[in-house]
Length: 544
Image 1 (cartoon, rainbow, N blue to C red):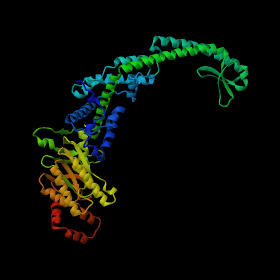
Image 2 (image 1 turned 45 degrees about the horizontal axis):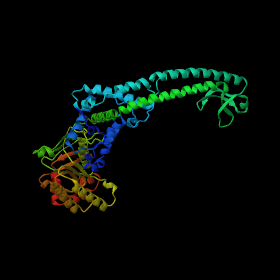
Image 3 (image 1 turned 30 degrees about the vertical axis):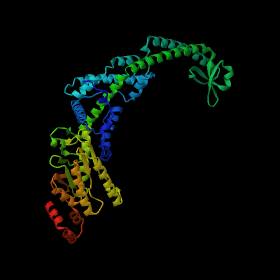
Image 4 (image 1 turned 90 degrees about the vertical axis):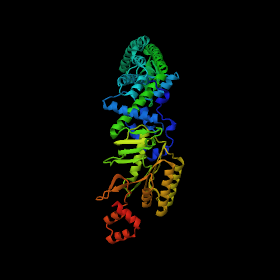
């Protein structure tokens, strides 16, 4: 299998966001990206995780899901991959492609990258049960000759080895011999000047590439030699004794010849990197894709997630194209004991209305459905016992923090504007999520408007999951074919949220129950109950 360049791009194609762009931030998909990135081992793998986006092409989604599934399987079999050090390899390779010089500390990481890619190619190519990962491995170029060339010339610390070339070995041997002779001359001069009490400090050091002694400034006239520096205080003069000048010249010439040969070796190796530049970039892309796949696999294991089904485009099979089913689904960003959500939408019903008390879990349910849809279309496994999504062209959400908005009018206006935007964009292949439909206005008008909005969305054709407090909307849904009520309840003992979704019945508000529990007089509670309309009392009776 030969991979085209387009199949190994780490940055998702621009067409993948589309109708998902608004909900990616609103549903906190960016936090999912961050969590996946934390499992990546390379900078490019992390970049790939941060660029994850829902796709709208069924083949692309299937490929991404297969990548995650095979990576998880590989990890659960005890497999591991190597990716080399954390380096900006692309910058190194691009410089070499342009004829630039790479230093030793930049070349050796490329050796490590080549070594890692060879290990991964050999490791994964044996796994015939992982066809996609094996195909990635088969396309990793053979960089063994470049690896050997760098290893023969550069140490792990990035230093050019003596054996990098025959000339370099000879030059360094000559340089060390001359430096040995120079050291002897300098030590004799130091001992002589010490006896004459001319020395500020009994050390031999270097200034401007020359060996010097530290002579007291006032004794400068008594020392024959070349001044190369003066201390900041002026008390010390750095002098190269005249007896050492000739040896110093020879040593400097030998060092310059050595430096020229070192640069020649580095240029030769840089040229080899440039010649292998496109293979190196392909290797980086493939290793980055493998790293991202392993990150997705580790994330799947951490969530105890399962691969979702995403189907669509089957001629004549409208039910399969529209089915959104979740069994035991959990919100991936919630910690602790998360009560799973199960629901079925799209086969018999295209609109689901969730009602129930505040803090009962309605908004969490909406976000769970939407976020898992984004994850499935981005090629991630989802935390659910079973998950099936239709191929979506967008997820549109109107989920706001009502407590952060002070004026009801601005809340209502924002709500309507969001809904209008969604109506203009949503298609029969979209998923629409609306929280607190019909709120922040007169209850009677809000209920009527919410019912009309649900009816309009039903005519447009997207799958819709909405929440509301209005019982009138629940009655409308109960009477409208193709719509279904669902409820989330409070625990009758603790009045804490259960987060359980029950299909078929609207939820209770528990206002009277909570008021009684908090101590309002029984006669007040009874008067409130009697003030309810007969329809409301009948609904309350129906809900128990």
